[in-house]
Image (cartoon, rainbow, N blue to C red):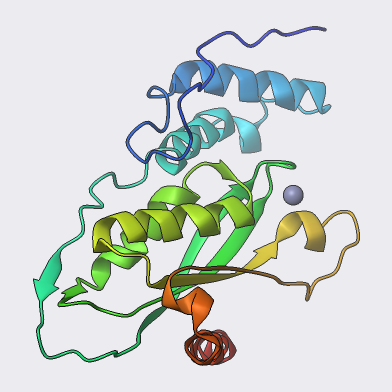
Length: 211
Ligand SMILES: [Zn+2]
């Protein structure tokens, strides 16, 4: 049986937050397709345990692809900061690997050196959630979070480190349960000052070890 999937393909620049997803997904259509998938996988979507599954899966996709779009970042003036390193860690978001459509858990730590103002802390997590709510690869996610933070902070003295656990590694393929992938985006002083960079990495690793 051949099934063609109609509908708009996302063509926007995937780097923009507001342009994603391309359109609200048609949950009825997605539920139909999930039911068809179940049939192709040898299942009976009308049996008791599966009766509501296509609708639940479709609703989940809709939620996953529409993370909180209000990631406006509040900055607070703070004149008394002198070369202080600010680290925001403990952010854990779920995304989907675009190669296998399997979950990846991303532990995000961001660091920056404030220049006259500090960023409202709660916004970091929202930014991370926004870029996680799509088909992703960890390296692009890391860069997108860093570039977005650079935009809102207004300078590029910023570093973002991400430690990811990929189910495509732990439940398929090489099946390495304990494998973790770490990615780092460093710019500005974090790129040119090895001491600052090292300090950031030490503090980021401490966050992960404490988690
Ligand atoms: Zn994968």
